[in-house]
Image (cartoon, rainbow, N blue to C red):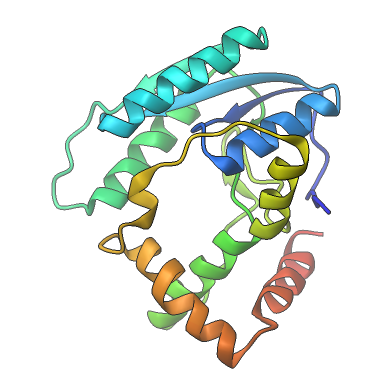
Length: 200
């Protein structure tokens, strides 16, 4: 079951990458008769250009408004992950919308909690990132999203970099988390309870 934190307004914008998570959220909201606008951020990679075309076609086919942003800053001493994240949120905070959804889910929360715990301070992904950015799907598991897109036959585009374990989050996702779940199979339930205690 897709679970939501807070009340989602009728008119909203989804930060849409074209990937499985955002396409599931867009479809779910459209089925709920929401007025959905899309915001796509191009990271200036080969995949990003393909994904932008995918999102543009989807927006045209479904008569959805779409705004596009692109990397403009310089990486400096930041990791590539940090650089892309900072640029993406700078773009989202400039989008003219009172309510923007990023499609983070429960498994993202588990990964973030693990990564922050390794550094001595466990953290949850915040429901409200500040400004106009919200994350209402934090309690929905990745498996639920996969089941939804299969059942509803939702189209999406896969980013091949999601499999590259040189990115820290991907390393945790593909290498660390499966081993942690062997030790504690109920970790997702534990994190969901923390989310409920914190945000509901």
